[in-house]
Image (cartoon, rainbow, N blue to C red; front, side, top):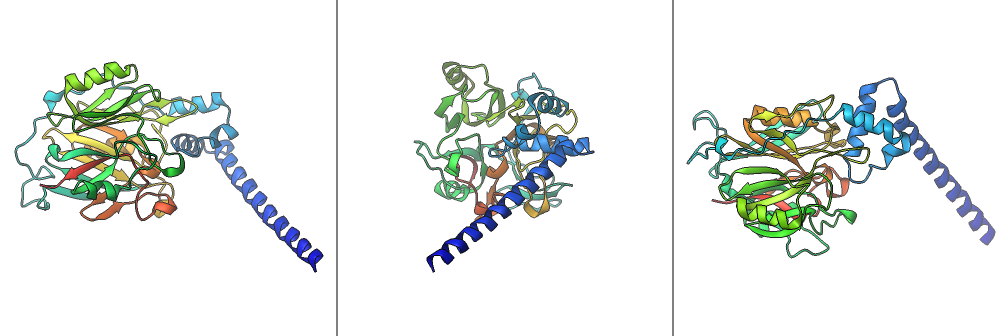
Length: 358
């Protein structure tokens, strides 16, 4: 009897191992087909997309050497805009409908916001337009612990009406414990390590409610602290600009009305979160889906630039995206994480941009 059980167990394990091996081989051959198949576009999209993920970057070096990866990344990149944000290009309106149109043309809610659905070829998105930029602030879990909060918790903790995910953070185990780079909330510097990752930018608002997009990659912590004080930065996070065989991240989308010049695809296609500001001060918060959610691959850098341009952004930046991308508005998730386990909510996050109630 014992021998039969042992044999049956061994046979079952053999079947499981065989199936697992077959699946792994199938996945590997499929990925190999993307890399070595007849379509250069598919190959480039595969490489740039996977290099933007947090958990699957390792796949690309398994199939291509570093020189091949770097060649693809360089063919699908964007030129850096050297100009700093010019605050004088933003003139905050005293009272403007969220769309920038007259009351009888575009409906908007009592809080002066508009929620717009946007459908692209490879993505679905929601844009939240807030006419008063002073209402957009940063929620954090400071003092930092090992565990963050989901987006709904951030919004409700602050009695806010809406929010989107924020900047880079330590995401091992999906605990969302602390940010990377910088976190400023209500003028308080809660995290300051500009050398944590290469190519960091600070994205956020100053005391005049102007969206600032600042290269902090060459700053020390002391220099960044002084910059935040001198420039009156009130709420900000960090994201990364890096094109290499290890990462494919970008920040700048539009600076002073100038869209970035895109080479090739510009980036991979993934879930995204972006923030922009119009000339009248209105803030644009954009979240897209991707990675198979609703059959969509995601949005590229070119997609984000076009959307932000279409909606009148003078300045715009890409911030943390991927599985972290989420939007919560007026008591419900408008965009949830594309990760299956968090498909009805968001990942745990240390920072979020939120919109206060009037």
